[in-house]
Image (cartoon, rainbow over all chains, first blue to last red; front, side):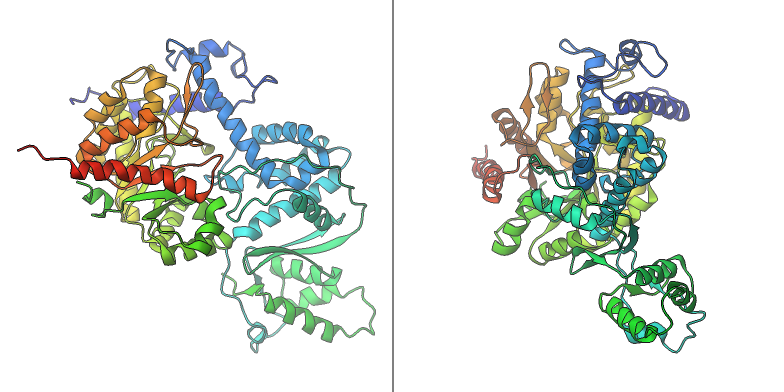
Length: 305
Length: 284
């Protein structure tokens, strides 16, 4: 085939313009009847805008053809959020969850090739737009943080763990900084969301073993109304052991130590801050030793990069 | 022709896609399967259960990687993080080739998670070919490019889809993952003869074939992968292997997935076509 004369840069510019226009149509929210919006982003007719770059055929207009992609986009992405955030969905109900998801994905379109990352800015979104989860903004935020931590714990990076004897290794606690496994998240919550999410997950069918990124669709059972948790401070480590995700409750001081270490504070400072308010007669040394032995046994510590 | 430089001189036979609902069956019963195709992106994670499952599968089976998110036709820069993770997985699986689609799916850093059609222009073909070369040089394995099913065509197109595919892979010196079902679906949606497509691609570059089920609606046909393979696609498959020779073939079944045995039985039907081809009398 003889290539037609073309200027490569100009051709790529045109290709990019087509891709931008196509993506604009694909990612715009559907109407209530699951159709493509009649108005384009500039307020003009979508039919006219789409006809400029997509051919019709004998059965479908240009609009109809792009609408197929528009629908597929939303069905696929909404399905993914539906599966990744069962706790939030149960809290606000399917209908509101759907509206929230559309608003979230419109504000924060996917910025990763992996569908697994789709919910990585949902907490940020809810902090900025709490109306989507009224009257439960705090509970909703706790749920989203725990559900995102669950995704991270499921398949996040694991580095070679340090044994308890390797932790100090003759170094000065005043300057020693310890690193945690990248898959580990520490959370301070205003509600006992761990129990709530476990109850939700127990009632839903198992999703299989391979992450949220897979394309298989689990069947959806209509959830019976679960009792919402009452406010209660809890501190959690969301971790992985033998390839299963676990929610481990922590003492508040243990959480403070872990959170401080994760921020990069030296060991001694982290411990001093955590125990600032505890009574002086408690055996801090023994408690600390016990905690660190347990955390090391879980494989939580690793070398800093 | 079945074993060629595009599939790393392998002759893998009939495979099926590795899917979550079948993990337990495969790991506990260890059925005899020629090979499994994995979706690369499902295993481009850092650790955890997915990698544990993959390592168990690799102990028993041959695995080939098939990607859905490289977006070879995108005008964004190649995603280096994606490629690094992909290469790490290539080393782990020792896949003889890596495949992905002749499509785009992201623009300006925003991802649609779909396999979107290309306008068939010479500039686009040169652009995609250049990216395929870059990917192959980085991954150091042969790349097979798969034709996608599509529901839209562009005014900007300067050639047919099969001419575009040929142009891209000749320029990139790459192989083809020929999806027979996708050709059929697109032929229904764009009113062309699917055999024109089959007849006019460079058959010597086909390194793998995909077959799958689709769904017909009133005004269009959707590539749903939720059915057994339909008769028109089997007929095209028979024609395809007559042109390419018996080639590594994979059945895709991604939605409403039935039992492992049912999926495997459906895939093995492809073997019958290959055997028939081998036993056909040769004209003298």
